[in-house]
Every structure is written in structure tokens, then in C-alpha cells.
Length: 271
Image (cartoon, rainbow, N blue to C red; front, top):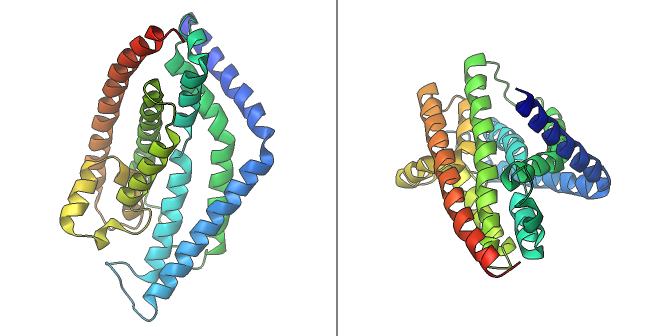
């Protein structure tokens, strides 16, 4: 019990330190939020133009499409992180060495650091997304079904964990190459496509949708948004939670393998 309390204090200390550091970059945080709002508004304007006089596209009315965009971007703001670039920089600059002899493992430290680093940005993103929803309050569809909302909450939490692990894994590629930003950008676009961030997945062939449902990405945008709109039932949501848990375990297992192999290379070159 004392050990757990001690570890929790260390965790909170790290989070607090990076929260204070994030406050020194308020302008950068603000600019990113403006960009997020702009992207959301562009998507809404684009789909409004696509609908024209049509009442339904892909099983969604224009009102449902706008709600899909708003709620999906809201979820996406919660799970996003930039962990891969931080890990890659620690490996490249040799800072990883000092963590190998510390009692608090690098995995625990870097996750604490990232939560502290992104917490302010996430709160600002949630706030900006909420402001956009309020702006479209007469168009936005409100759903207060507690059962659905609990499943959605669980899905978003698991999506956040999966996203952290995936970013961690991408960052570990720096054991073999000095540059991971390009890889991260490519994977980020693939994630956005398979998550339904560009457009609802049900506009694509059924085979593609089935593949997307087998991957973790759809559960960070498309599926929770569809659950919110009640376009899919709870059984699909519960099955999605199981798939997410499986992916989290798989990612964690891959991370351990890549970490052990990468660490041998790291120590071998004497960094």
C-alpha cells in the first residue's frame, strides 16, 4: 500500500511538472485549437454542400451527419497524443540512458509525462469542441440514453489507452531510425481514414467496413459516433469493447518485444 502511494505521488509530481510546462506554450495551444475548430467547420460546410437538396446520404440525414462530425471530433480530441515524437527524441538524444537505472521505469515515466503534457491541450480541445457543438445547438442531436453513453465512455477510454500504446510503439522505432515523424504522419492518416474521420465508413463497401471493425481505429470515431446516433445497437458496441481490449493486449505484447530488442541495440551502440 505504501509502495502504491509512493508511486502515485511520483506520477502526480510528473503530471504537475508537465502541466506547468504546457502553460508556458499557451499561444501554441490556442493556435492548435483554432485549427481544430476551422477543420470541423470546413467539414460541416463541405457536407452541407454535398447534401444540397438531398435528404439522406448513407443512411444519415444532414442533421445526423453534422452531429456525427461534431461528436466524432469531440471523441478524437480526447484520445489524441504526441507520445511517439517524445520517445523518439529521448532515444535519439540518449536521454533514455538515465531512466534505465531509475526505480521508476521508463514506461511509467513517459506515460505520466504524456498525460501531464496533453492534459491541458485535451481540456482546451474538449472546450473548443463543446463551443462548436453549442454553436450548432439547434442542429445537434442530443442523446441522453445512459446505457449507450456508458458504453461510449468505456469505448473512448479504451481508445485513449490503445492510442497511447500505438504511439509508444511508433516511438520505439527510433531504436532503428532517427526519424519517426514521417511514419507517424502516415499512420495518423491511415488511422483517420479507417476511423471514419474523413467520412462515415458506411459509405464504403461492406467488406471495407468489416475490415475496419477488426482494427482498433473505428472505435475512436465512427463506432462511438454511430452508437451516439443509435445507428448501431449495443451488441455492436460491446463487441467493439472486446476487440479494443484484445488490441490493447496485443499492442502491449508487441511493445515488450520491440523494447527488449531495441534496448539490446541501444546498449550495443553505447548510447
